[in-house]
Image (cartoon, rainbow, N blue to C red; front, top):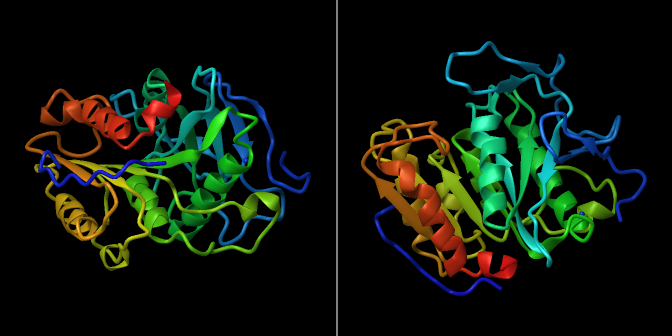
Amino acid sequence: MLRPLITSVALICAFSSSAAESAKPDPEGPGIVVTLWSKGSMPGQPVKGTERTLPARGDEVIRLTDISEPSFTVYRAESAKPAPAVIISPGGGYGGLAYNKEGTEVAAWLNKLGVTGVVLKYRVPNNREGAFQDIQRAIRLVRHRAAEWNIDRAHVGVMGFSAGGHLSARLSVHAVAATYARIDAADDQPLRPDFAVLGYPAYLDEGLVPLVDGQTAPTFIAHAEDDKRFIKGSDAYFAALKGTKAPHTFFRCATGGHGHGLRSEKDVKVWPDKCRDWLTQIGVLASAR
């Protein structure tokens, strides 16, 4: 159980045979790839084309787009007992995914904390409703297969960056009914994440703030003030969170801009330590120790 803590500091998963899963080694790492939807079962609008990598920009970021077969990759933490898990949604303005910088690199960091990282490839480009169905399916699959992957079903959270932060927040405030019809037993699992981590989230002020209530998942936000375009959304979202009884924290600092992931050398560089401390305070990391 998450221990009560309210912080207003301004540092601001057996799976049925009909399921859409295929498990195989990830060619880019030791994870297990799980396809979200079986052939013909994916709801909503599909994405045309085949997954591809966008041209390099000289910043060592792998950017993927045309995600026509949504999936996630499980990077298991080394733990003798069930470990917490986090579904990681990379950002990219819903046009692509900064897959390593805001996905696999984050999973590696979580593994060091004793947390299983689940990197989500949701539908892009320009398919917000499809992406939302993807993250809903993902959290249900992770919970349904928790025993197989040595995951603590009581501690399954979400973490997202930029557009992925918006997607994670959206799941946190829309956690009652799915936006697709039941497919199999996995869809009997709850949708609400046990906690949420939002890194420089985008678009939070576009309809999410009025939906925040006492059922919204405990949330940690990290955002730099010089991210002028999106900081106002985090401010408004956190102001709404403060009116609830769940443990919420905003790590708000002066510099860091947008899209840094774990790579910044500016003030925001300490956000992983702040997040680790928060996860410990609310009892998530304690279950992995």
